[in-house]
Image (tube, rainbow, N blue to C red):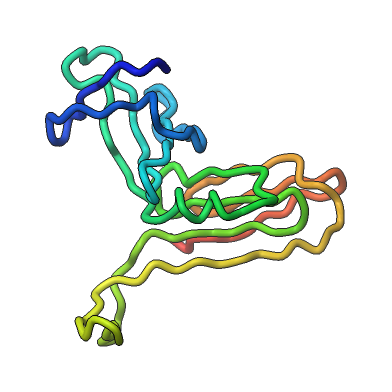
Length: 163
């Protein structure tokens, strides 16, 4: 990737993509190049390459808050990916477990942060799926609605979104 700075289309500021840890790629739009997900401090940012736009070669299109921090703490992490619509990210371990991190969504009730005393308008949920298998995980793929986890003997299909 090199260490050349590339401008973002959103803000016009320069961002050095070469110094950030690569997390995964995702095919968000089949007519475009795959997106890169890179760690930026504690977050994971998804960048869409725009090779035909020299003044804005990289467009920031999604952020997964704290995913960079979370993935760094997973000792047995083997896979990481996200849904093409960026509604969730997922991490998979070598054996048994998949972690699903949903984007923040509005809450139906009034919630307050106890420490800050402020009202909370959105909550991001995380889920852990424990697979009924002792076989190593061989493959891991996300669609907008499902997470597919492949072992030697099984294909587990986890329904993530109802949309």
